[in-house]
Length: 355
Image (cartoon, rainbow, N blue to C red; front, side):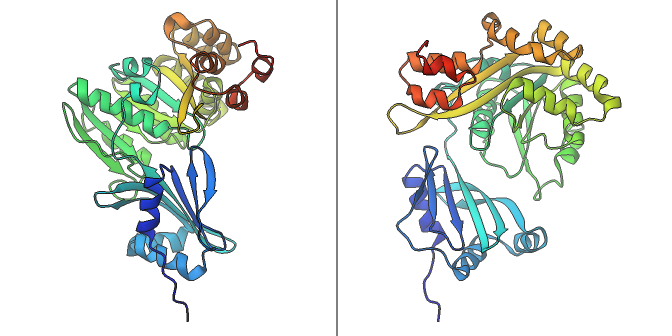
């Protein structure tokens, strides 16, 4: 008879103590953690189906189990009292159940501590408009947004509504009133929650992700009508972000959306994380596009392909290309050249040692 027990809380506590960003569990595989971007196997045997079912039963409530059975996957948050919080995804694969646990730091770091550009604090003080954080999964978008929300909370008196799937960082009201809403728990969809938020007198709306046409359109409307809207997209650059937003809409609406975007967009920050030179952490590298009048004109006139040249020469407005930021990180001795080459847009320049 099957006897071995898997204690999920012990595994998560280990992941926290090892400064891991993620814990991965999967039937038929050895449990693994991700530390500084690299996957590392734990000194355990491969998980059996019965063990993953046990983990599922320990972590999911009855309603979440029902959703998992119906949809074959589920996102939610999980907490170990006095230890930490986790963003969790359970899903099915050919061998059985799998789960990914993202560790959410209990302390919200400042932009200075994170090493993100000072312009992020300036953008958080804007009264209205759209700020987009972009990048691949695990590039620190949620952490950067949390720092921006905390900066507002420390320095302004505002009403902030966050709409997340799931809620990651908990914010305690300081100088602001903060209402955090979670998909599946306190609202049914991003679009419903944004539509409702427009009747709830917010100053700032955080939308966890702009996933579909309706959510994008409502976020643009909110930004256009006097609210600061912060959100994310899984795109790798400012140009690709603008293209993605416009491409979501049918051809008959694209001109109108270009006009809305040109009026409401404040900035796009495309973020990547690199292993630091000491191999004991990661540092962000960012492309920053600030929507000045020239950028707005190019969006409106559908000449988005010309935006990179404006970013390259736009340092007076706080703009920078990814490669320019990588150059800074190299000059400051924060990353190795080999790390910079992995994410650089013009790898030849870094390989030849021009920077």
